[in-house]
Amino acid sequence: MAARMLLKQLIETGTETVSPLYPEREAREMVFMLLEHILGTKRHTHIIEPAYEVGEEQAQEVMQAFSRLAGGEPLQYVTGAACFYGRDFHVTPSVLIPRPETEILCRTALEHLPTSPSVLDLCTGSGCIAWTMALERPGAAVTAVDISDEALSVARSQDFAEEMARTGAKAPAFLKADILDGHSALSSLYGSGVRFDLILSNPPYVMDKEKALMRPNVLEHEPHLALFVSDDDPLVFYRAVAGWAGHLLSPAGTGIVEINEALGLPTARVFLDAGFSSAEIVKDFSDRDRFIIFHR
Image (cartoon, rainbow, N blue to C red; front, top):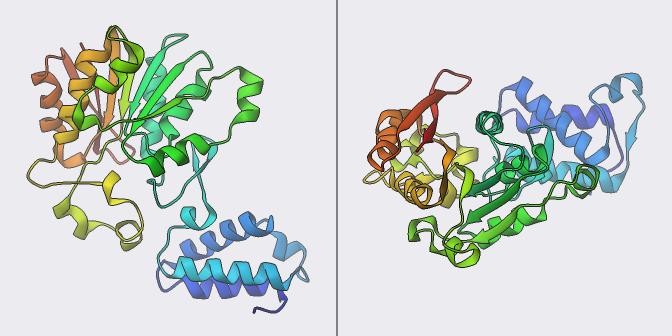
């Protein structure tokens, strides 16, 4: 068991432990974030309190966490938390870690929302999109769908009770359904006349052949069910989304999907071929094709 240690020693040990896998600056930043999560310390604590000691039990917990990072496990899975749209979300290896690019989808979606909208989030995963819509628009009625029981459990576990009590926001309704099986699950629940003002989705879109380009910590730890599609049919989920939207999107509604940057034009064509009047490609922070906004 690790003995009591000075905080500055833990920082040095952690950086050395994680550096073989990450650049030193990134490794040190991860160590600071981990220590803040476990100990409640700040990145300057070891400077203004050079004699700050960490007890045996907490030092052991920290060292075990360092080992998990050194083994390639993403920091967010080690801490069980990921920041998205200014809020902390609970995450486990059953769900993808929310990406900054997906915040663009949420920001764009909020620009298209009426005052009290109905929103459908397909392939919800951690629920970060669904919860963001519900919390940013307290009048919103949000429904979210996923095929994974484990992912739905994580999505339902998000704890924003304090914010909801303050704003009057309503928790999303999380439902199990395979979007490749069609929209009948929602129709049977809500009735055949159900319509949504906004339909969103960040479905699996990474082609199997792209695995070689991915970092090992993503490839080895994040759920493949939520990431990958066959090279033979990489747009299968977008055809499914287009089918759901064809039945469930309101006449003046908007759909937004996150996409594979290599498949922008073919993905837009899926929605145009499905009868939507427009399918606009939107770029991300790095000027890559990342989203499609579609309308009837």
